[in-house]
Image 1 (cartoon, one colour):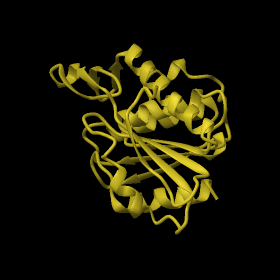
Image 2 (spheres, helix red, strand yellow):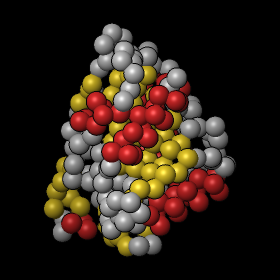
Image 3 (cartoon, one colour):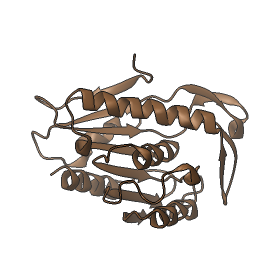
Length: 220
C-alpha cells in the first residue's frame, strides 16, 4: 500500500522518466501541478510527474495547528531549524517508497528526478543523497538541509546532477540557510548548479523556465 496519496500526471504513451515533486509546509500535491505545462518540455516527452501529499500533522512553530507537513518544526531562526527527526525520517522513507515504486514500474533509477520546495526540498535532499543507487537528479527550491550530519560522507553519488534555487528576499527560509546547504554539499564532495532570483518564498517564471531546461538536459 502506498504510504502517501499523490497526484499523477502521465505522459502520452508510456513513461521513461519520473519526477517526484514535494510541496512545502501547509500546501499539497496540487501546489506544483499547474507548473508542468509552463516548463516548456518538448511535445511527446515521456516524463511522469508525481506530486505527493504530506500528512496532516501538528506544527509547533505554527501554534501546534495541524496542517500538511513532512515533519514538525520545533523551532526556527536565521541560524537553522530544529525538526522532529522521527517524522523527518518517516517522510524520507515514504518518499523512498515512491522512488522504489517507480523503479518497479519500469523507470530506471537514473531517470528518476527528486524535486522539492521548502520542507519538501529538505526531504528531497535527504532521500537523494542517501539513496543506495544514484538517481537522475535533485532539484531543491527555497530550502535548507536539516540533519546534514546524518547523510553519507563523503558523497555517496558525487556525479548526481543537483540544481539548487533560492530567492534573495526570502523571509521564511533565508538565502543564508540555502547557502549553508551548498556548503554541506561541497563538504560531502558534490557539485551543483546554483541560481538565485529577486523574490521571496515563492516561485517565479524565470525559475520555471530554468527548471524546464534543466529537466530536458538531465533527461536527454
